[in-house]
Figure 1: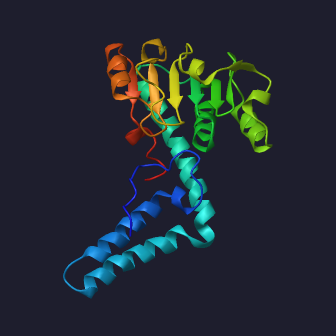
Figure 2 (figure 1 turned 60 degrees about the horizontal axis):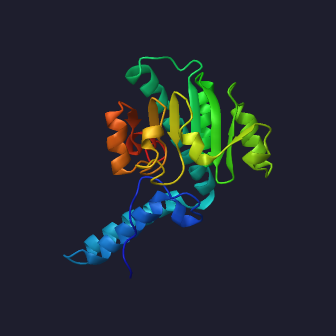
Figure 3 (figure 1 turned 90 degrees about the vertical axis):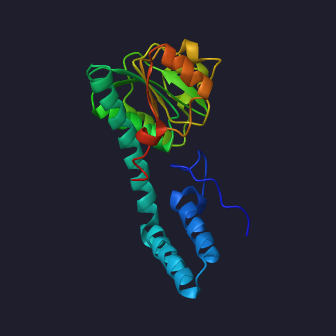
Length: 231
């Protein structure tokens, strides 16, 4: 019993366990659908059979690898979306493009790594512990190792920057890979980035989106940029 959970393209930030996988929600929907089917037991069992097949694919020994591939794919997709935006919408080059990444977690860190490989200069990153800034650009692999060693970004040797301040830095590309509604009517006018890539679910409020549009800011939406882990 109980309501079917809200569906969304990506798991929420800080979600843990089996409910972190988008497939979990789809399986729940499929089961509920099978329970409500009219027309006899065969159709009901057919629907539940499809679910069991999906459950086997989403669990077992390959589960951790599946989650890891999903994270890598999402990060690569966000970075590829940024590259597309820079080259085709800004008519520029990725080489030395200055990027700020808010949300240096599993997806954000992979996005930063792929962006650096594409020639961009990742000059600022942040997570729940705070942010750091380096005008010369970070070695993203060093940052990832730093966090894997159990240290915070604030402990990395770099200029500290507040999370809110990171949003308004003078950069070319701003990648949003944290929580919802971070760019709002309160800070939209201060955004300097020419291109904003949504690596999180709904990071820009409706009012802020209208402001960014009037300022001719280019926004690549989450349904496109962060769909790599779902596809």
